[in-house]
Image 1 (tube, helix red, strand yellow):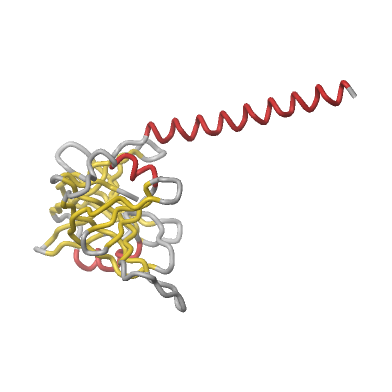
Image 2 (image 1 turned 90 degrees about the horizontal axis):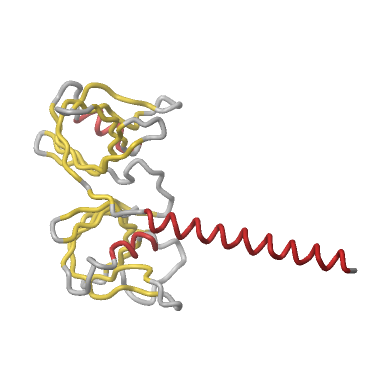
Length: 220
């Protein structure tokens, strides 16, 4: 009996240590995350990149100082191939990243060519079904939407638009996304599933970028 009791105590201590370690790791990852600023890049398109299924999802941009792989959603591959030609000068907005292979990448936000701006709907990430068209908007922050535990889950604008993004991103924006601040955003409008009806006529946006006081940040 004594041996069984000691074994149970050891198991409980082990489980508690594992849970504490996981929570500490999650907290550490959250504290390490920073706001990712969207910046301007310009350079020459030197070639296209495809994936293992031979679907276009990127192109190479040679700037004055570096060569980047610019990553975009395959859903705009056809349009980019039609509108953008190799060896042309481009102006783009994006977020600089370092790939797993220590190569320089840019997650495309938008590209301007021939006086036309093409927005990347998913910034190189897969999109879920049930979303509508990609949208751009401007509004004033009316309030921060909170759940029953008081955690911020969205930003409500004065035109009955709700911006959705991760909790970690909302915490990072907490000090600059103040009530009364005018912001602009890009994102995908959520589509209400068939058969569902909303209590209030809010437009819900899965936010991709948010611009506050002239600085644009990646939010997905």
